[in-house]
Length: 444
Image (cartoon, rainbow, N blue to C red):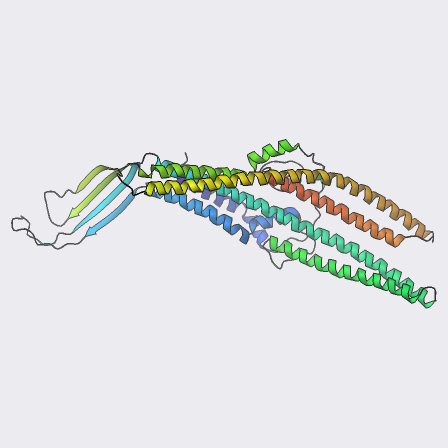
């Protein structure tokens, strides 16, 4: 077993080295957001920033560290100095008739053996610390997924705004031609108003999607803990990883049970709770301690030794129910965590099944969107050719339909990327690590 101070000291040293290694990245992230902003750069910014939503998870981790230090302190060496200032009236037969009976004592104490109580308490503290560290990893994964969602929302808002602007431009051209025909008496007023209404509807859509562009950027800035820093341009992510083969559900389930950070954390917390029950049971057992005492006395006496060394065996005979209460409390905590673990496992299984099915459907939908985009592209080419031949055509409508098909295909791609990221998180991989690494998946 790794001794608690060494474990924590090693962790602190590792954290310090990590801070030094990432100093340049943190300094860069602390400045303005990169322009244009890529998703990998957004991850760097999100990892470097201390987001408020991490504070509770970090506090739990720090509390586990403190509890482990407290366990070690209870078993550590205790050194104390005691001074006594006393004035006495010596007995008539005493050889020393002075009144100053002051003394100073230096005590050194160390618990040597407690029949497993401290061993179980220390092991519980280490398991708790490991569990909270895994919870911190899970929070980081959830933050990555949130950043991805906000990032894709911005890109989709830009595409939607482009579609709406194109629709408004076509509606304006159509309205302008309708006005000319109305002046020539070729179009009735009611038909002209229909074109006018359609144009105003398109104007409203443009205004709405323009507002959406700003609001999605504000949400992305908030997710990066950079409120008010709105990115003007984002880099579209690579889509090569969308060709990943979806494993069988049973394979994914086994990976999730073994590697999911939340499930691993729950198992560590369960082990910590079980060890605390064992530690509580041993609170009523004897304790063996070693003591050293060095003393200085102002008055001499036959029973006053300048140095003493001894072993102290403390055997509790009656604890007034304290041990039973501690065991009951620890056992209740264990039962609560067991219930939480069972609930979490069922919920994880359901989330995994839903994601597995969603990814399968999105792959099919993506093929549909590719076919639709190809069709709209060719249809637009035909409409443009007919327009150039001055043949009556639906060029404007074809342009809008092509833009809408492009939007739906992009939306499907981003939904698929996000679903894969969530699946990676459930199975113990960092969200986005597969396609950011060029298709090489692995735990981080």
